[in-house]
Amino acid sequence: MDSDIQISITDRNDKTHMLEVPSDIGMNLMELCNSSEISKMGICGGIALCGSCQVYIESDHELTDCSNDELSMLDNLMYVKSNSRLACQIKLNNKLNGLKVRIAPDQ
Image 1 (tube, rainbow, N blue to C red):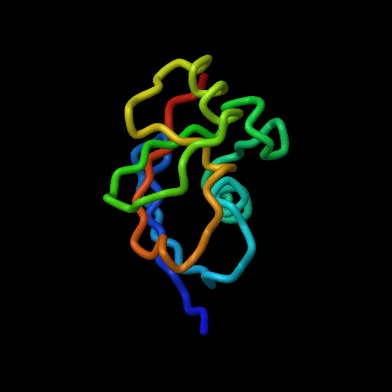
Image 2 (cartoon, rainbow, N blue to C red; image 1 turned 120 degrees about the vertical axis):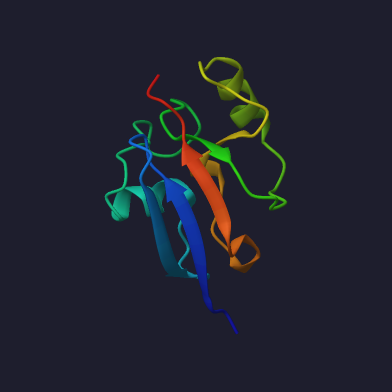
């Protein structure tokens, strides 16, 4: 049985938003940010082509490995850190309960 998960998102103004969503909602992190009106991101529609949804993972969650498309996009962005990921590539699930991310500066 799926349950709610909590996600902490710090926006570009350094304000932290605590969100509680069903783990089976079928969204990625970018879609959650957009639907919660935390930040408008994903100019490309969430297919790892624009980098507008870059986030920094600030918790110790083990995420799926980056795809080649995601790695290629991250190689072309500014403000990339070792904990950078594209929010459009992070599918929400019960293993992400307690995830903490910070939205990267605008490109």
